Length: 291
Ligand code: UTP
Image 1 (cartoon, rainbow, N blue to C red):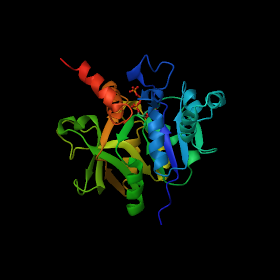
Image 2 (cartoon, protein in one colour):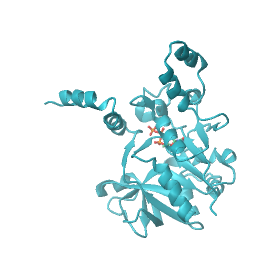
Image 3 (tube, protein in one colour):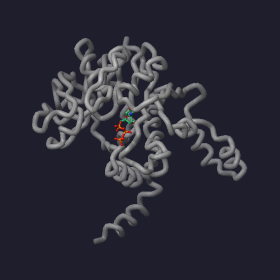
């Protein structure tokens, strides 16, 4: 029996330099896609998949994320007094339950691998989900549920992947798999940003992972990789020598909210998917694009 996936880690300690000056005092994870912060969309995905504990690896200037996932008594009381029951109910529905969140700090932006390692004591000796908040997976069903289903069927480690254009593979972490057409397939190799034209597939790592706790022992070595940072992919490549890794394909739309174009496109796509906004927003877009 595979151990259940109860905890999810959200690394939110990056500097967000691509969004300066917006991210000077505000974490990029709090930028909103329509009316929800990016991090809320990703926590929603994990919650809908049955995750029970949410571990945030934060850094300086990120205190507002902690506040976002806590009660806001004054606001709640005011909403109650003004009879805004629907707004109040929606606010409370988004909140993880008491004791379901943990916050730890990455004291310096030493890389994604280092951020994940900072969660080791909170995660403990069990497999866990890892969700990169920048990457919004837009689909009718929360993608993390598919990841957990793939894990329950196969065990080991699961990496979310999606197809990217062949001429852009050099910008991504790419996996080689047994069967590129299968929904879930054994991974043969992982390559971080392969040289142009050398990628074995166009399946890129999407920012969703289920990892076994042994990854922490490898990250503890603190070996520096590309850009002088402690890279998660390097540790996964080493772990794949002793444990199976599977790729689970995501067929919905992915928006990289760490980039301006991805973030702006996400706002348009999520607004167009909202019944309450789509008709008026579509008309506004049409008027804007008329020439
Ligand atoms: P990115 O490299 O996209 O985030 O890391 P960044 O460094 O904040 O972005 P730019 O390039 O300066 O604009 C992917 C994810 O890993 C987290 C980030 O917060 C983001 O969610 N991360 C990255 C950390 O938590 N710590 C790090 O040291 C690096």
